[in-house]
Amino acid sequence: MPVTRESFFHLARTLAKEAEVPAEIHGYFEQHRDRLWRTIEAFDLLSHGQKKFLEIGPYFSYTPFLWKENVAESVTVFEGAAPEPMLLEKLYRKRGIEIRYGDLFHIFDESGSSARQLPYGDDSFDVITCWETMEHFNFNPVHFVRELKRVIRKGGAVCITVPNMAKFDKRLRLLSGKSIATPVTAYFEHADAKFYGFHWREYTLAEIAELFRRNGFVIETARHLQTFENRPANLLRGIKRTFAGALTAVFPATGALCLIKAKKV
Image 1: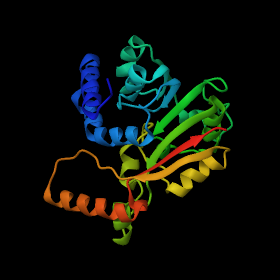
Image 2: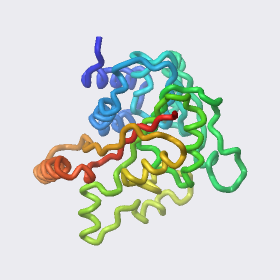
Image 3: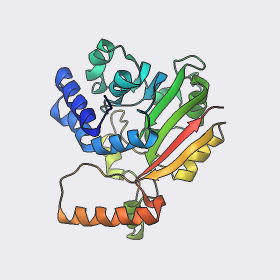
């Protein structure tokens, strides 16, 4: 039976209930679920089977369960060692999904204290997904991309999304003289503990494609995707989204996400 938008949302609700995920944390999925579904469709990941799947940083997207139930022989998750995503650990193990925790900030920092390697062997996976994660990196991402190339098999695909630095609302902010970066006030709010939520570096489509191309990947797909978060409707938000959607149809570079599919040949 084909997976639909509604069946994906139902699966997420069922898993959240089984894992007793608090409502405020499950709210992450509810806020982003339409964007997740559009990303799944854009990469066409449910149309044919894949043998070995790695997802980096899924948080509460519930997509690893989707891959395992429908297209993958094996699914591996690499997740940050934070209390929130650990709520899903029992469900991962129950459904035969391998889960590993690690700190990419430590693995790929520039102190020279680590091997800068993911904990997987060469040519281990057929598909790697890493969605809206790389913008959180506070380190040079070159070694991370090289590691993706090492652990993906020949002919395999890496599917990446990042927020578009040049999207419509950010252009508006710049025109009004406002910053498009993480607010300085947020640094003070999290000054005394490690926090992974900052957007340290966003990208344009050309930049994220170049990052992978210069690391030896062939870019099979590079496109913008216009998506919106699931927020309460109001008149101003409706007008803005209507205008943004029309603008993106004419000028795709103003879309919310940059999406690339990079292959190892």
